[in-house]
Length: 120
Image (cartoon, rainbow, N blue to C red):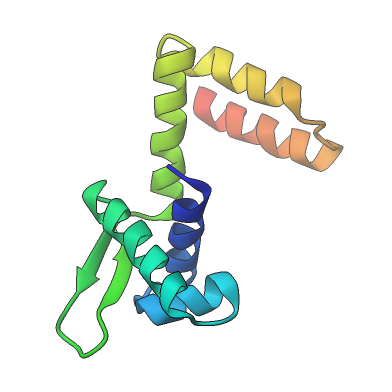
């Protein structure tokens, strides 16, 4: 997935009622031009081909919406990462992530609480 496609998804997640191409263009670029409109429409077409976006054509302006939540999308991406880089195992992937970030005491405590809830 390209950065532009991710940006379109972010905009759609922020607007759960759906957005027109024009609204997405304005959110991405702060202005509306024909060439930008065509580019965003191409991003939306690719996202629809991937099953990540749907369109409601019942009104004058077609409204585009994400087909899954940000959390579901991130979960799928993490599962894909685990499958392709860690032999399908989440433990080494999560350890790698934790080693890459500096956790303050509050975040470390939150992580420990989550781990303890999993144990129960």
